[in-house]
Length: 265
View 1 (cartoon, rainbow, N blue to C red):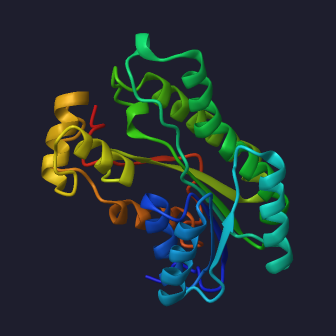
View 2 (cartoon, helix red, strand yellow; view 1 turned 120 degrees about the horizontal axis):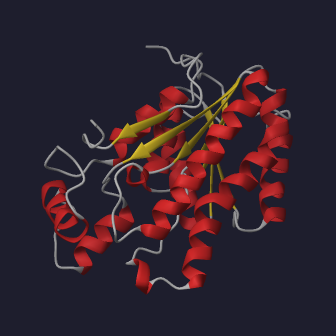
């Protein structure tokens, strides 16, 4: 299936690792020009090398702290200069941390969850909008979480931030519909991200085994899916890329689960 992404200009926030990198890989394989934006220079350089090898003609790695509005503005100013002021695709994959029971979380952890989980996305969309509006077609895809639909008592701050992101995304889909800029949300379930694998190893579980990883998640957080294993980043990337593509021409304001089956009620 031709997704219509050849030579499209795409930016992936948090695109140097995990689900962000998996999404960037799919974009590169479809022939898009891909910019990955993150903090760690070494990870960005590694991602650019890989994306170039997968077919992205103008892969870029741009270092920025999305907690800094001026830094975010600077990144999109650089993209505007390189890509003639246009951007077709913006994917936001950065999310909050701060797991823990309600009584354990400090005010600062609540604030950081909203800052990392929502405000980074807000800054990136705000800075990117002039470029997206100038392009002949444009898509925004934001990463939320299935825990907004199936709660865990160990993730109240994380889930609250993701629910806020989902709400803001829905509002953006309404705002930007007149511009025919489609805005959708992907809600991954228990995916074997670097942070989740590292957590499993910290509790003595082989996080590289998706079945053992799911067992550990079920023990500590409650079983989150019908399937017996955790998902993989490469199982999420293609869904995000379809939503980001020209092939998706009429879906907006949607929240798509990629979670091994958890929301059948």
